[in-house]
Image (cartoon, rainbow, N blue to C red):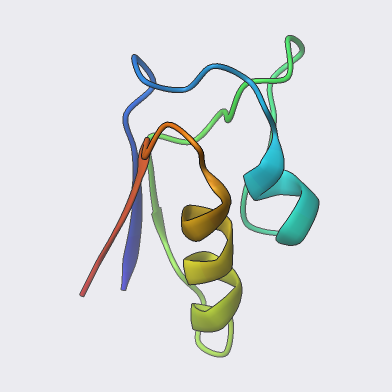
Length: 63
C-alpha cells in the first residue's frame, strides 16, 4: 500500500497529520511534505484515515 500526495492540491489544512502524524509529515509551512510513501505494515488504517480527512482530495491510497 502506498500514499500518494498531489502537492498542487494540498492547501495546508494538516488534517492528515492530525489523525496520522507518524505517516503524514508537514513542511515548515504546514503543507504535507510527502509525495509518495510506502505504508508500513500495521499502519494501513492510519494511512486511509489521513487520506479521508483531506478536504481537497489531495491524498490517494494505492495497493
